[in-house]
Amino acid sequence: MYGYNDIGIKVFQNGNEKNTGVVKYKTTMYHGLGGPSHTTPVKENFNYDVSTGLFKGYAVFIMYDTAAFWAADYDYNSEFGVDSAVFPLEFNSLSQILVWDNTFTQRVYILTLLSSLSPVSGLNELKVMLHETSGFQVYNELPNAEMFIRPQLISTGQGSDNNANPVYLGEGIYKGTVNFTMPGEWYVYDSVKYNGTVITKSPPPKFKFTIN
Image (cartoon, rainbow, N blue to C red; front, side, top):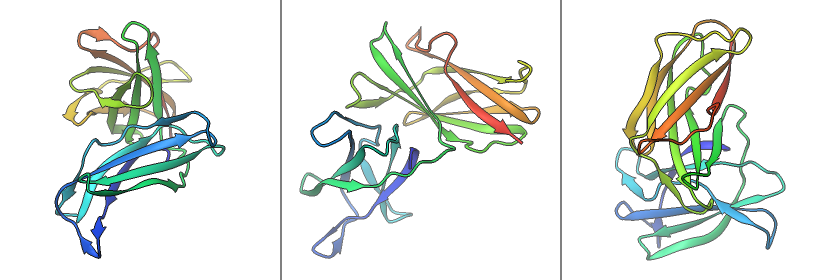
């Protein structure tokens, strides 16, 4: 679906299931046959997870367009694979992805909401994933960035206390806490500093939530 996806893959060769090695998974969005294309952030290596019996990873589908189509390449240990397998993508209205460019660093940054997709009044987990790209073909998970969140109730402009800025957990993921003190529509601004440089614009990018 549009947004962040946990993905598990099973691999069989001649009817025998594989449980070692690495799966490479590459997705490409084609805007018409012979037209422009771009990839999307995916886990570099899908490693075997014993607890699920799957080669586990993720993909962040950054665009939903009914006039385009997605296809994926699968590779197992550079031994065999599947090329350009077309698959459908569904839209998830709860998914949120923020994309912005920075002329100083000459990079495009992608901030993906992982949770909570449907927050409630009070304290909520805020988990996001941060990537960078220079041409929408190769994406890097960004580690150890500093994030500073600022919730704002849209109708009044008031903020909230008891928020915790997202901190780095690994693999491009950051986790914090956001406090929605009352029902209504809220913005959550996220200013990001990386390698000592503020990479977000002013005003910074924002997620939007409706709290019932």
